[in-house]
Length: 182
Image (tube, rainbow, N blue to C red):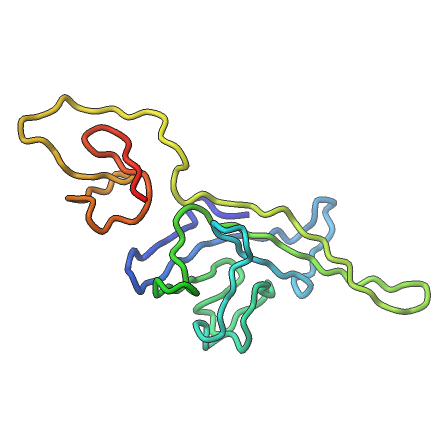
């Protein structure tokens, strides 16, 4: 489960983002979930598992991973049991997130057969997404036009930008109307 208001973004080009989440310690039947059998994957806008690059997470990872063990602590800075940090350089391999972040939990249960052999059965949750920005504008209220004419652009959370130059793709309000910048 993702916490309410769990996303934090430093808003810096070479900065970081992080989000908080919680995995329950019992399944839907009340059975204990052994965290040593628990892994999770993170998803972003493209519906593909996010790749945590060993080159980026040099203190915690030796290999690139799309599935993280629930108890991955490393140095406790990049990963812990309730928070993940994302670092970005705006390069293709380290994207900035714009719309949503999701988590899918996998529980690998070892099952011993009648012949004594052990197989692993994977139980996976649905991907639970948290939308970082509203996906639609339902109502725009404007004040009467003034003689000075506000030529600013506003994003969906109300931040003001003096002009459209350099704005990332998205939906903005300009002179009381919705504007899409591609």
